Structure formats: C-alpha cells, structure tokens
View 1 (tube, rainbow, N blue to C red):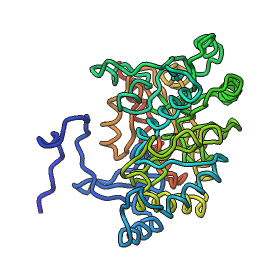
View 2 (view 1 turned 135 degrees about the horizontal axis):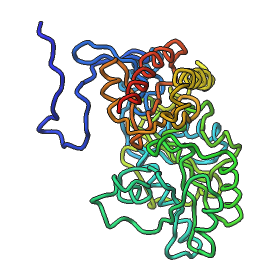
View 3 (view 1 turned 90 degrees about the horizontal axis):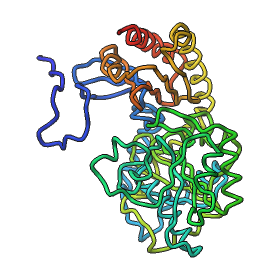
View 4 (view 1 turned 120 degrees about the horizontal axis):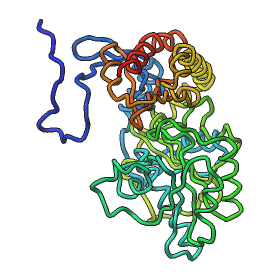
Length: 404
C-alpha cells in the first residue's frame, strides 16, 4: 500500500487563511497524535490550550457518545438542564454568580465588551471607553480585533472600533495616567496571562492594584481567561493566584476539551447587565457542548489535574532552565515564563522556524509574538512526557540560537 503524501499545499476549495504546516493529523491517544502517514508526534500544543484531556480520553468519549444519542442541539427558547448544571459548577469554582454560554472565546470576549458598554450606558455615559493592553489578543471580530494590541492582525480591517484606551502591562502608574480625568472609562479588560502576546503574565501585585482601582472608580474588571483558565496554571482561573475576583470573566478553549464552547462568567456587579433581547448565541449552551464542559470538570477533579498541571509545569520549567542554562547566561534565552502548563520561552531572535523543525522531530509546539516558543499541552501530560518534550525541544532551541 502506497503511503499518503505529505500535504504540501492548501486545498483550492478551503479559504487560504492559515499558514499551515505540511501534515494532516489522523488520530490521537493521550498526549500523542499520528498523521495520515502514521508518524507519531508528542502534543505539547493541545490544539492551542484546547484539548484539556488530551485525545480519545476513556472517560470523555463515552459520555459524548451517549449525549449524541440524546440531544446535540436545542435552541435557547427552552431550558437546557446541562446549562444550568455547568453554570452552577463554574459559579462554585469562580466565586461569581451567573453565566452566559456561547461557542468560542471570541464570542465570549465580544459579549464582555457589550456588557461593559451597556454598563456605561446604564450609568448615563454616552460614549463608554474600555482600557485594553499592549500586545493583548482578544479575537478577530471587528470589536475584539480593535481591543487586540497587534498591528499586524489589525492591518487591512480599518476603521477599527473606537472606545479603547491602551496601556502597557504591569504598570499601574501608566494605567492611572491614561485614565485620569476621563469620565467615560467603564472597564479594564486584560488577560491574566497574555497568550498570543508572548505568554506574558500580569503580576500578582498589579492585578490586586487594578482590582482596587476598579473598585475605587466604579469600573468593571474584566479578565480574559480564554487561554489561561480552566486549570491550566494549577488553579481553576489564573487570576486566582492574586486572590482577587473579576466582575466579568470570558472562558472558552479548555472548557470543552475540544468541543466548541465559550462562556462569560459574571459577578454581582455585572450579572444583571444583559437582559432578554440584549444578547444571544444560536449554538451557545447546546446540550453537546454543555455535556463536554460538565465531563471536563468532572474528570479534571477525579484525576486531580490542577495539581498535575502545577507539578508537571514546574518540572518542565525547571528542565528548560537547566537545559538552556548556557543560553540564559549568554542572553540567547531572554526569559522562561508562565505558570503551570502554560509556558513561554522567549528567545533573543525570531524563532518561527522551530515549528517545522519540532514537527520534523515529532513534537507539536507553537511560536507566538515572533520570538516566544509556547507550550500549552494537555493537562494530563506526565513528567515522563515532559522529559520527552525537553529531550526534543532543548536541542532545537540550542541549534537555532547557535546559527548566525
């Protein structure tokens, strides 16, 4: 039997919106996937922080199969019991109060922006403004693109939506200066850890300072946990390391372990902003997605995956520091940052070539912000598998940095 060829070009029928790598994946098991030629890869990307439970999880798959035989979709004209149960679980784990369900992180962030604007209008502010951040990424709709801090992804889509005040990360003085005397500011919108912006965490003290400022000025604190939430850092939500609570928290990615899902969790200050007719989502909260969310949380707790994310993440981070000690000393590696199983290795030169080189070596990773290797594997990854990641990745980074 002749082996299937490598995929060398995009389909003429699929819109050319992705710079794809030349493989097509066939199936997976745990933290490994195989391509259509039978080559195996260790998955340190997790579908970009989506596949919380890895691939073909023995507890998740039967539950989803059962749900497929019952209901996949109903519209939101009717009560959806799984919605109500998943909302309760998210409220309990966040300490917040109410949840709106949608189908993606972009939708969740768009809903958050609408909530902030309506919060302002309800207070009599005609042109509400929202504080956003340099290097932020909140999505690719026109509104979330405008909130995003990346000129490359904004190019060609102007005019952008107005009403945003942009500030640098981790600088409370800059935030105060940018908003001083501006009565139109209604919210601060930030990622607890910037994902596409280079795996850049907001400092614990900074998060506490922003929470205090929002309280003092009657602003909403909206924390985008789409990529860093759902146990990825070792707590349910990354902002919990600071001991604070937001007013609005968009979620998606890992919440459904691969089934499309999004959510906006709101605290008491924001929970009643949206009323019937203000917002909606056709697919949001459908029974299949809700079952995926319920099973994800159940399995995460049964298998203690928050503790696993902390343990394996610390092991992986320490291994990177040891393996790249010389490169850290000579400045080739600027910083290894992140928490749990959301790690970034910031290099002193562009490193996009590493995606193909890692692929050739049998490893799935990504590169973000041009110079940062991003590792966001399934939360089921073991220390032994983390050691495999180190054995494959560290030599590739060393080789790249040694090239002129």
